[in-house]
Image 1 (cartoon, rainbow, N blue to C red):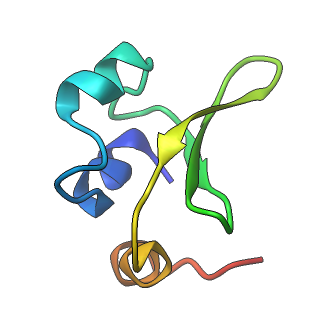
Image 2 (spheres, rainbow, N blue to C red):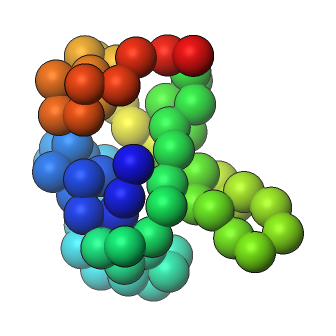
Length: 70
């Protein structure tokens, strides 16, 4: 998903706009969430974990994106 989509999925206590910006997450940044709720940012040569989502993140992501776990 994109950073813009991620910003709609996060809830209070997970990330602020400042946290995302400091981690290099822009609206167009490609991000993913692993099965443990860790948010990973796509970098040129690897994925970087920048933090995690709390509770019910699977359902929130599926509702926002329509994506299911692969």
